[in-house]
Image (cartoon, rainbow, N blue to C red; front, side):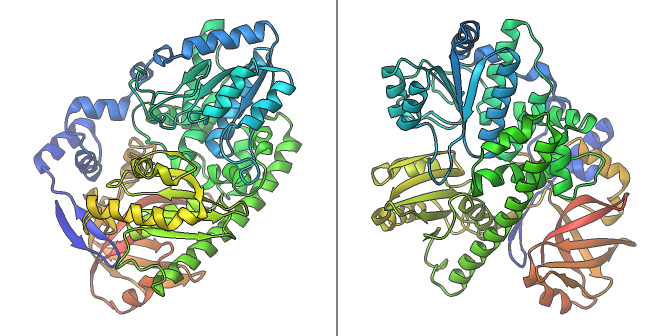
Length: 571
């Protein structure tokens, strides 16, 4: 691997075996730079390429392999047969919302007597609680099913047992060393669960359980589940590898073949007029609108939005989603600006500190996770942001880099925390505000002992070099074979050498830089989003060539399409 320093990022350049790439390009009839990208990512055999490019349902494990799945299904069937009241307890994010919508959509079809509850992020907090179980018992519920939460709900599980409620926990978050005392727990991360694929989202676990249930009652699953599975999986940023990759691809095929009215409204809100959508459209345009309700207000209307047959209701809630998502964007921008100012003024000193650690009583808890993600990408180091609440607690969101497992780090600091949970690169936590300095010191020490300066330097991985002349319609068509893009299967980053400006760059909305570049006898549009820092450097270039790291996309405008370069960095 070669290294090249860009204006903002350190570029990691691959070294390819050209002869192997040429053989694969000829064998699979795929554009040479894309084959180079696949080799860079470890697909170096025909078997590996075949599974990646042409994976089928036969490669997906059967849901019965999930520990406790059959036990859970039998209990649900009994509850439906006996007309016992069933409560679905979800979560306020898009994964929890789509999981809840899927359960409601499917179990109502089977005649269940049921309802659902989604907690309000600000008032109820995360996950099923003792209070929620007591309310369920008073309302006569005999079966409670959690979706996308519950794996650390020890007190709630105990209360359910004492109240005569059977609790089925379906979750995908990593458990602690012990598990809640529930009737059944369906979570592939359980240490004794033989299910081979561990990366399902909460909606993926819900889908597997419902697949097994509908197999048992010999009824086909409604097609709506594939749309919900697509939305929730992409929104939760789980790896789009293996089984997730298959189901997201399948869901995109279904949605692009027959679009539901809620998807039509989400596309209209996001000004998407493309003939077909991609996983990136789902992740950046559709899913954030669903998430907006849970981040800014009460998430329960989002379930009705997703599964209602009443177009007037969908339109009404869709308008709310649009307004809340626009407000969320503005809040996110203001918090990013505030933190970047603190970094500039050395109030957060990245020359001495290994993490971005900040707190405020005015930052909404539903937005700080998004801000943390942006900071990690920009600065290449873990970010922990906290909402300081009136009850003396700090409620935080963490995002990390691959080299530092934030979940394990929080485990080692658990004596300072009231509650925590999550994954290796993302977690949520709460702690007493007076423990914030201790937590920061503990994490700083862990990072200092585990990571080097190189680990903490902002980087981009280049997948392959490309010439502008190679950006043809076939190239774009071939690139769709590599989709869906997302976590674990990132959008390819290409390296274009020695491009020159055709005309001076222009700044759009004070944030984005747009220009035309020339190389290999070809002119292409190039736009840098959120990189106003580049304008002076580009203006000073004149006719001097420079290298650029880019994404390659198709831009749709007024019914016409053209290939566009989305810039990331320049040398």
